[in-house]
Structure formats: structure tokens, C-alpha cells
Length: 120
Ligand code: SF4
View 1 (cartoon, rainbow, N blue to C red):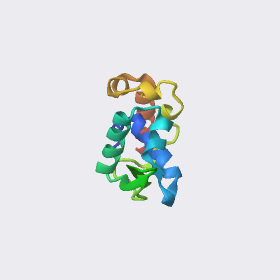
View 2 (cartoon, helix red, strand yellow; view 1 turned 180 degrees about the vertical axis):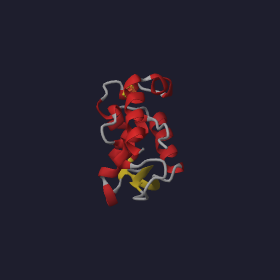
View 3 (cartoon, helix red, strand yellow; view 1 turned 90 degrees about the horizontal axis):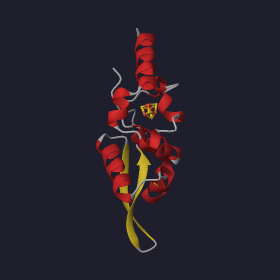
View 4 (tube, protein in one colour; view 1 turned 120 degrees about the vertical axis):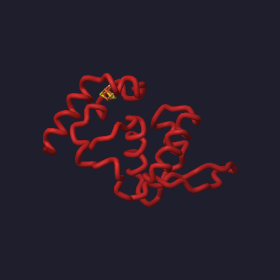
């Protein structure tokens, strides 16, 4: 079953995943997402709570911050092959999309229906 996932969390996870074993400073993630540190922190904490990343404290330029690592654990609620052709990755609304839009988005609903029907 496909679970609703915040598109920004998916985008953040893909970004963190690209950095592999070296990880990435959380400030780089905020820049990539165009998010405030508060929103970025919320996303990182949520991903960590879901077991998709881990955060390690790091002293950088005299300030404590976090480095984010993809856990390489196969997420229970995300099957990457099921995300093929997900309209969110190319959507111009991704950065402003929220749960209200996800629930009513015709493109996403059509893609989900197609994905479910393919699985049988
Ligand atoms: S508007 Fe639809 S396609 Fe675009 S990011 Fe939101 S849910 Fe995805």
C-alpha cells in the first residue's frame, strides 16, 4: 500500500541520499529546499523519526549543527521502484505543495491509481 508522504520530505531524502557515506550539513539541505531552518529542521527530524536518515552533531565554523546521513535502510513505507514516474518530482508546485494539495491533486491520484493497478 502506498502511504502519503510529504513531497518535500521525499525531495530532502533524495538530496541526502546523494551524499552517501560523507553525509551533508543540514544547512545545505535548507538551501537546496529553499526552506527556513525551522521548516528544514522539521523535515530532518521527521525523516530521522521515520528511520530514513540519522543526524549527527558536528561543530562547523564554531557552531554546532547536524550532518545528515542516509541510513541505507530500505524504508518500510517507501519502495523506490514504486516512485517511478511520480508527478511530484517534476512538479513546479513541489515546494509549496502541502497535504491539502496532495489529497486533492488529480495528477498524484491518477499516478497512485495506476501504480496500485500495476501491482495487481
Ligand atoms: S501538486 Fe500534485 S504533483 Fe505537484 S507536488 Fe503536489 S501532489 Fe505532487
